[in-house]
Image (cartoon, rainbow, N blue to C red; front, side, top):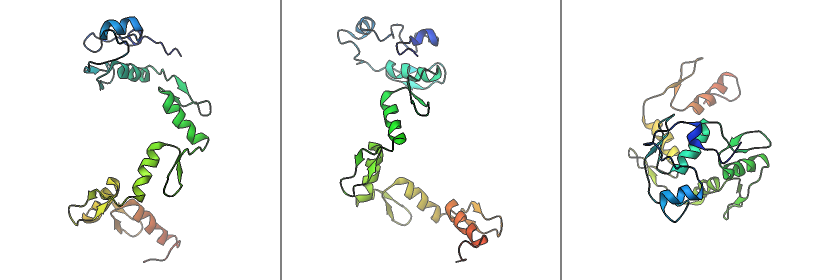
Length: 187
């Protein structure tokens, strides 16, 4: 796979979608943007001719087009999964090697990705920005608020096929099903 692929040859694009000098070589970029090569100062609305996704930078469109052309340049040597960015491959490798370089300074838990550590830090915070407008209860995560909102509705879409009892949450139904297999007593 060649990282210097010319997208124009792979996928025909109209001039309104992207300028013809898109090759990322110093001369053509300097011609497009002035004396500072590779500095895309003017944002434009560029559209993928295959799926109509929009981009403001030609470099992002070029990377996106490589997905359509199966030009994933960075392949995992363990599972053969491919990535368009080396940084994504490196993050992926943390999972294979069970590496957890991002450590919580409060409880010493470790995580393979910075984003997971950031999400974890909410556990130690007293901040509860997601508030139920029906009862005033607050939550640290929006997903927890969304789960809570099910309890205010009479909608119980999860029905037991053995006794017709209904539940607002799937995990409640799964817990209930253990009653029928004698895994836990009926409450």
